Image (cartoon, rainbow, N blue to C red; front, side, top):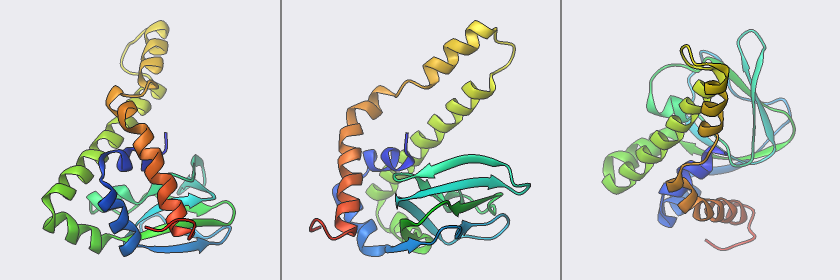
Amino acid sequence: MRKALYILADLKDEDLRWFIDIGNYREVSAGEKLIEPNKAIDALYIITQGKFTVTTSNGKQIAELASGDILGEMSLIEKRLPSVSVSAIDKAKILVIPQVEIHERLKADDGFAARFYRALAVFLSARLRSTVATLGYGDASEDDAEDLFEDEHTLDEGLLDTLHVAGDRMRRLINILEGREDG
């Protein structure tokens, strides 16, 4: 599941419009690094086209991200520096939303803050459940581990209820940024 769908599911259309208005839509060259270990980042990135690889400091690839994924959410909510590198595999396009602008809106708009933080919490909860299921948990038997893995890869009913809205918002975001639709 792409991260942006978790975020967009809980936001309003006006929040999407704000991201577009405040953000900078740009191309990324193949090999360009958006995030580097131990270097502060000052933006939230929404991938609208292309693929990115996430690698550890020793060069091990741990994930591949594509359209609909979000980068920089962890640095947005905590002060720790990134521990991974994120690089474009091929030419890509991203929406860059400055962290300072997000923080200002979070302080000024309680409704946006509630929606945004809830969306992040749902996403991070899903990622934690997936990680636990993938790595196994405690002394569970192999059958229990398989059941846990299957349970954890089933989408939450609340997310399923809003998935079509989130997908539509992602399509609209890309269409507006590409000039194929008016905002």
